[in-house]
Structure formats: C-alpha cells, structure tokens
Image (cartoon, helix red, strand yellow):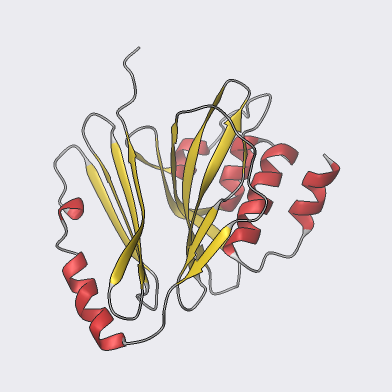
Length: 212
C-alpha cells in the first residue's frame, strides 16, 4: 500500500508515468474507480464489444482485489503527446496482456482513450524497465500521404454489428487502429513513423470469448 501511495503521488510527465499511477490507483482506490478516474470522457473499452467506458464504469462496484499490471513497451509519437502502452496484467486467478492508448490533454493531464487486453498464459513477473520507442519526426510530406492510405486499410472497414476505430497522434507519427468482430474477437494495431514509412510495432489479436 505504501508503494501504491508513492506511485500515485509521483509526477506524471509521460504515458509510462500515467500507466504507473493508474495501476497504483487500482490498488489504492479500487480497480473500476481507477479506470474511471483516468479515462477520457470518450474512452472506449471492450466488453467484448466496444463500449463507452464512462457509461460502463458508472456505479460499478470494485472487486475485492484490483488487477495488477505494468507496461513492458511504450510506443510514443514524435511530439510525446500520444502513446500506446502494452504489457502483462495479473489477477488472483487469471493473467494476460493489456494495451492502452494514452493522450496528453492540452492541460498536460494524461487520459486513456482505448483500453483492451486478453486473458491467456501463466502470470509472470511484472516488468520494471519497459522498452520505450519514439517515432521519427522526419519527412512530414511522405508521412501525410501514407496516413491517407492507412485510412483505407481493411481493419477500418466495419461489418455490422462490429465496430472499428482509428486514432492518429496530432503530429501524425503514431497510428492506432482497432476492430471488433460480431463474435467479440478483436484486433488492435499500432504503427510508428520511421522517417520513411509506418512500421507495425504492435498487432494484438484477441480471440472471441468462450461461450458460457
């Protein structure tokens, strides 16, 4: 609990700082309370279909023990105001991988805007030194042309009642796309600008939830 208090009160400068404070709050104030606190008003989560997070979280009781998680990788836009964090999460009887899209507001406050993950594998140790990769700022003209092409990618073509989402950083150096199929299976993709092309740095495919 002392560690959670220290992490929650530490300065939040980067998306990794925000992720650590978010995870600490899940232990300090409760899992769903922390999700609501750090979510943008238009944030999306998956249940398994895309859902407005604040609507789903409103009035939801916290579980007795909150999830624990930590970013293993952080992919950051050139201007440092948009990032995709990914890493493992653990619960008493389950574990998996999460992916969170973070945007820094004009006020300087970080808020998550898309959050999703999978449940698979045995729980391992949470990472303490994540890998950070930042996009190139070079060759803006070529970058803008490739962004336009990215909008036409198959992942952005909805098939009702599925849903898709496409986000790019303000400077256009980080692209994030997600798609949910009618059966609840999902794909989340992140790409970083190298100065010459967009390189895929994350491609997470989540199977449809088992029927119960």
